[in-house]
Image (cartoon, rainbow, N blue to C red; front, side, top):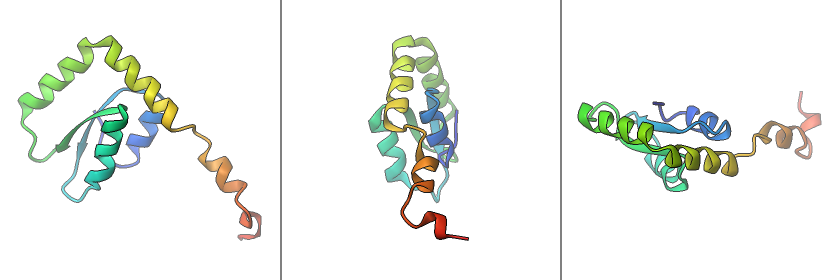
Length: 97
């Protein structure tokens, strides 16, 4: 169970299945994109989430090996973990002090 900040990238790149909750000031569109990509189950604002919904979702994810495997594969497919390498190879980056 994760928050919707940078953690959604971290669990995706490591192939960790997740259930994501957001804060009221979140970028909901981006959270929805991660769910649509199949890397997480997004449940919306954690402040207003009913405990039963979270419990049912945890149970569903835990009981579904194929779902967890799919989340893992899809997360690793959309994020390659080479962002820092791309930044260092960016034209002009070596000129930055």
